[in-house]
Structure formats: C-alpha cells, structure tokens
Length: 562
Image (tube, rainbow, N blue to C red; front, side, top):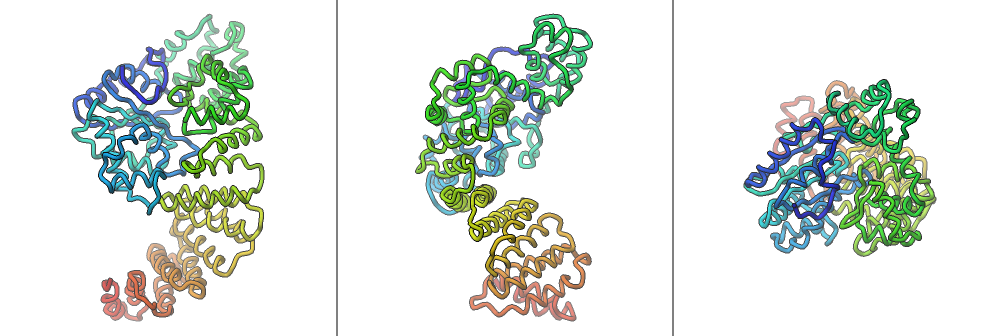
C-alpha cells in the first residue's frame, strides 16, 4: 500500500469504474513510467461527478511503494498566490533546509514563513522541483491536485514549470480539472467523459435495490448524461414507491444542481452539531483538523459530532479534513444562513494564530463581519501589503476590495476603493476595477487621487479592448497627472503611446501618435534622467516631428541611451 499524507477516500473497487478500462490503462501506464524513473504529468479533464477523484483513489490503491501527496484548488483561495502550492508542499517543508539558500529563501517568502521582497517565480519553481526530487529519492512520489480549475494562478504556473523539467525523477504530477488550464497546455491530457448508455445502465442496476419503472430509468439515465456520481447518489434514500412511480425524481435539473440538492437533503437529516462541524470545515479550505476542531469547540461542538457525517459518507477527518465531493462542501456552505456562516468564520478567525497566519485570520474576520469594521479593514490593508510584497497582486486586490466594503467613513472608503481598483486592473480584472472606480469617485478624493482614477480608467480600457478610446483616456490621464506627479505622468505618456500604436487610425486625431508624442514632449526635463525618460523621448520625437526621418534621427540616440 502507498504511504501518503492525505487519504482521499476509500480504496476499494467501486461500481464507478464500469466502462473505465481505457482510463485505468492510461493511469496504470502513468504509474509505471514514474516508477521507472520517467517523470510524468497527466491532466484529467472532465465535469463534476464524472469520476476524476474516484479514479485517483483507485490509482492510490494500486500505487504500491509510492508516496502520495494531495492538494486541491479551493474557490475561495483562487486569489491568494501560492495557496495551493503551500497546501501540497506542507508535508515536505521539514526538508526545506536542504535547499540552496536562494531557493529556500524564495519559497519561505512565498509561503509567508519569512519576510522579504517579492519572490522570484523562477526560484520558487526551482525550489519546488528540488523539494519534490529530494522527496522522491527514498521512494517514487505521486502528487495529485484535485479541482485544478480553482487553483490560484501562481501555484498553477509553478507546477507547470516543475512539470516541464521532470526528466529522470521518480515524480508524477496528476491533476484533475473541470476545464483545460492555459498554464498546463501541452501536457498529456486524459479526457474523462460520461459513461456510454450501456455502461450507465450497468452502473445504475448495480446500485438499485428494487425494480424501477423502465420509463423512469430511461429518464434518469438521460438526465445524468453518463455522470457516475449522479447515478450513484440520486437514488440514495428513495423508497420503492418513489422508484416505482418516479415521485422522488420529479423536475429535470442539471446534474450539478441535482447533486447539490441531494447533498443538501442529506445534510438536513444530520444532527445540528454535525452540521455546525461541517460548516466550519467548509469555511476553512486549508483542511487543518486541529484548527477545525478548535473553532468547532468554540461553537459548542464536541468530537462525537463527526460520527454522523462519516457514517453518511459525506466527510472524513484524520490527518486532514476532506469532503466526499466538492459539491458537498458547496452544499454545506450554501445551505447555512448568513449568520451561521459568519459565526463559523468568526470562530476560525479566533482560532487562527495571528503571528503565524495573519492574512488568513484577517480574511476569516472579514467574512465574519456583519457590517463596517475599521479594525478588520485595517488588517486587510496590511494583508494586501504583504501579498504585494510576495508578488500576489490578485490577492492584494481581494484584500483591498474587502477592506473597502468594510469601511464607512467616506474619505477612507473612497481611498480604499481606488486602491482596490488599481490592484484589480493590475491583476487583469478591468471590469471589476471599473466598478470599484465608480464607488471611489462617488467619495471625496484629492486632486492626486482623481488623476490616479483617470489612470485606472485608461488602464482598464487598454486592458479590455485596446480600442480607440484607450489612447485618449490614457492621454487625458497623463495630462492631469502632469500637474501632480510628473514621474507617474511620464510613465502614463509612455502607455498612451503604446495605446495609440495599437489603436492606429482608430485612435483619432485627438489621441493619435503625433498628438500623444507632442503632449509628452511638453513634460519638464527630469532632474535625474531614467530609462523611462530616455525611452519616452526616444519614442516621442520621431512621431512628433513633421518629418519622421528627421524625428527618427533625433530620437535614436535617446532610445538607446540607457
């Protein structure tokens, strides 16, 4: 049997493997290659409930001699850089001292273990590769990451970096995702589709305890669309009368919604203390049993509360906390009231160590807030600063947005909305940035902040469509900044030139290359010339001149001066 840090579920043969011969052969070949010293990456792609996790459990049962480490993308942590990587590598961090100093320091900074400048992604990737290779020296290593579609982008990029460099290492990276990820393009892919109709009938017959009306069976098979989990779960708890007449199966709803409704119904039959424990576990994506039990205890939940959930095959808690299926977590969280969710996050926030994990503590406290809370908003601002220092712009944007939402004082609220908008546009979310900008401009802003707001709007336009209005917005922002922040205006004029270049004739006479270039040349000479000032002048002179050749001759020495 394989040794492993996380137990994903039962290892017995399951009816879900009916019609999965091809998939099992591919996974068996994957293990053989890794065992033979050929590092492999395999991405399983398929819809929810189609059997990706079950196939992995089956793989584990046959991975004799392997060490298996597991992780999972979590929807609520998608904007927290390196969150998924941290989850996967936590069992191996005892080996971090073996890494070369630059790699060790980069990984420690990325995980918030130590402070420092934003870590070099290349070094974080090398550190991860070194850590996995070191762990695989004793025995082959298989790393499984479930729900890859919810993995934060930084973690996905690092794992892709590692995957492209696996050669003679006994390391296998196995991913399960509902959709293809751009970061993992080019790796071997195993498409997990629904079962063929004949296999779906065989699977359904294996779980039925009483005869079923043929018309009902045909309808269920059609609605399930070959989804194994739907076929296995939708009949749980139905009586013979329900099955014969179909009264328990009324209403055609999508498979995912059907499964979530089914899980909600099963939750309703559990004791209140068990539902509270499940809610705390659902609100904590880390899966730390000690943290979950401490928070649950604060809500009056004892150890016996887990028994009913385990017996219902919804939940397991051992070395880590694991739900039977991501839809169980979703059903648990969504079926709770807002007050219940706030109480769970409040307990988790109080149980989280403020020194070891201040950012997650702040996030839980923010989710627990029923209204404006300046103390929590200030904590979130500090978390945003730490995230930016680690290179996590998306995480900073998430923290700043929540800080804005928890602020009531008008001037402070406007400042935080503007900061969140700036972070959103930098993280590649221009539509969200524009929404925050509306809130920022509704409040009292300084002249400098209004100029920055113009810049954010221009950046959002440039990021979203590169259309004719982007260069004009960028030009107007640069002109406004020219009176309050000359250096930022210089950078903005450079962006305006890029926008005009992309827009071409669509930019119009007001913001074409010549207009932007001539406006840029009105800037005062910098006290200390920089690469930006040289580049701006070197670009602007050729386009501003009446004769391009004349301007080109004047600009060429400047554009190459630094």
